[in-house]
Image (cartoon, rainbow, N blue to C red; front, side, top):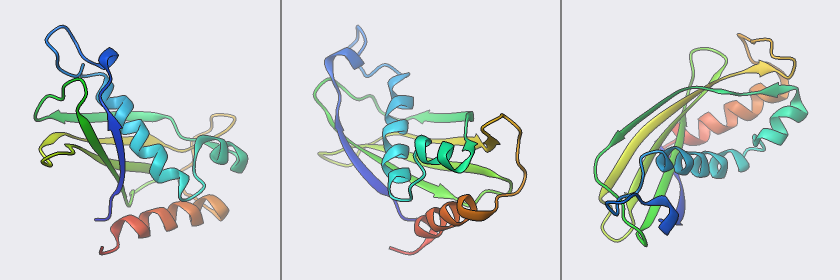
Length: 142
């Protein structure tokens, strides 16, 4: 699996009273990684709308392994896997930059709808080509 990596710094407003990154911010970091990956394949939300589709998240999974602290430099890794249906499935890892400690691992699933909110079950045309390019990139050997 090939990953796209994005570096971030844990900000003061992202930690709780105990000095650990608040759990909800991991979803925002997943989003940062996902957008970085989607940008490479012209699949950002504005591009999707331009093709006549939207892709709401319907499932999020996150396994927390180790806390991040204010000032920590983190690496957000994002990849995609081939879906069985008309959907987008992303995998994530968040690592501490200094020693690659795994902080969290997760996954999101997005269904594909037309812009008038009708579910599609099979991709076609330009959308199918861009998603195929994305998945082929991610599943290729590094």
